[in-house]
Length: 324
Ligand SMILES: [Zn+2]
Image (cartoon, rainbow, N blue to C red):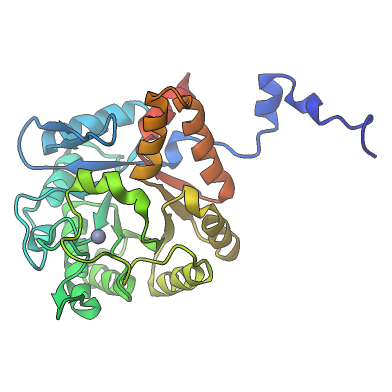
């Protein structure tokens, strides 16, 4: 039976009724805030293309995490801006590197903060690629031991989660083996399983100072038209020991999130990347969009597509809004 017995508008009449029948919810516990850690003391360098985001020295990273915790955000993922770069990204796996130093400081201050460490080489290599270069190309198999070594360094420093984002084949297995052989079997691996070669990473490269000095990343990151290939990537990473799989970016790839969620019974994360964040800010600054509305609509859309976890630069702003 249809109208007039059934009226869809009945359940939309008041805010309480809409809340009662809401199919998808957002909560601060599902959000992960990305932070960029840089050398120095008391440094807060504003990232011009990402309003409200900063390159933070270790002390300021600690302060920021305290503020995030006040808003119920207890997951952060760290990216490093090192003092020095070289061909093999050695500042990425050095024990006194910027990220392990930050992890130790956070671990000392917070018991219940879940510390994620992004694992990749592009922030630490002078050529800006996500692996070592042999004969002008990114050398997959030569990169694996270095990614494993970086993961081990971060895990030993106290990271709860390591998240390889390089898209080399076989890296999840290499990382899992290295962790397990060193008694770090409790450390979680979040795999950036379906990471696309996307134009939406533009502002991040400002923030992390990591653009490739030659060529691009299309020989290792995924090609935007493909979704079946994403499912194969996810399957391989799960076979190699990933605990959580990620799709990146989020908004242009909601169908990929949906397919991954429906075909694999594991937690799915999505990265609401810098370009997705900055374009909303830019439009809002022009008075073209209402920032709060489109921020919430974007994140609820990512959840509705099937993401259990969202990495987002909006984490604190969303938590503040939800607490109102
Ligand atoms: Zn990278």
